[in-house]
View 1 (cartoon, one colour):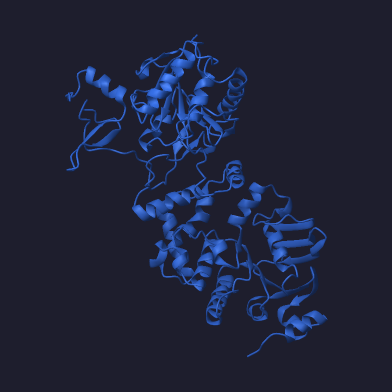
View 2 (spheres, helix red, strand yellow; view 1 turned 90 degrees about the vertical axis):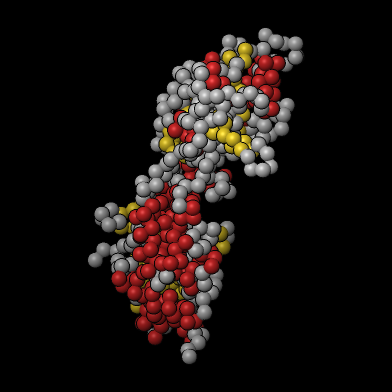
Length: 256
Length: 286
């Protein structure tokens, strides 16, 4: 099987401070990759660099599209990168307020990705929006409500619907369960797991919550001070950590 | 001609006019694209048409016949004063008749009488950026224009239909020019939008405070945004103008007293007078 995404020697520094150094990994179709590490370890920088929100200093982000063409994403012209981000890729923000249009109704939020890619039939767009609200377990009756009237968990699910509507192949998630209480987290994780399976999504998920990656991800990368210190199958890394930092991280996790 | 005012022909000095003409030429070359220009202080406040006046002053010649309208009318204070201003600083002939004018400066309307090849219409524009209400950052709106990234504008129309059942934008209704640039048509009613499409006249737009000029050359495609199942429509009235009896022109509602009495009359005074002179309707003397 060929990889969907390949990261080659990716580096990014802020002035003298190196945030990511020589990061490399492969992501295969249908795979969920977890990136864990403490605050400031460079995991969010890495995700934002892959998404094109930040310019990288060196290295390559290579993407294989469904037609079998490879693209070096960090060298694509902006118009193509934007198109990619709203068709085949998606980004889920930690705070749904950053990923949603808060002054636009739930339906309008889902519609926006469709309108961005050129759909111009109101009735069809609305049907699609209703369908995706159902997929993320939001009552379709609330299609015309503003996201501000939704609970935190619902907002996060609406953000998912908004990203999923163009049926992307790769989703980048930055702490999608952060700021949610435990029972809501569980429901969201459950939903994420079934969406990943049903739509054969590839996901890169950044989190500091070991429980989230244990539940969702197939492979795991552990970052410390901008470097990958350990990587492998999730269970292998978590049950038999080799690097001292990973051992510390695993032992520091609360287990009920 | 009339140099007794002590001002140069057209009020602005020749260098300024030349720089504005350069901006106008650029604007014509890229239909619908906003060109920055060095907007000057004018002897009136922003919001009174300083952008339109600078464009008019730069293109006006001694043989031009100028018409100035405000909300369709030739006799409102804005129109009267701008017309008097140009008569004073240019000494050019002025007219109220659309067909006789070579240069028309307008605020908020396009005349009902169809424009002809060779005529130029200058719009006064308060806010040239149609995306400003959706995206406050100019850096980002410029990028959106460059990348033809206009989805956000459609989100607004989607919200309109969802809230009101139809697209509720009634003036300054956004248009696509030449299938490329999203453009604000200035606050004309959407009734006038179809008149911009394939118009034989040259259409120039000047925004003084925002320092932008843009243009629609003659015979250019201008399309109002809409959805496949919610096509663009213009306003209709179930009344006729009480002066001339027109059922096809844009009507203004005039409140007559505080008992709720009102009448509907043409907003285009020249058109109304002409159709009265042609013997239509019943002219009410008061």
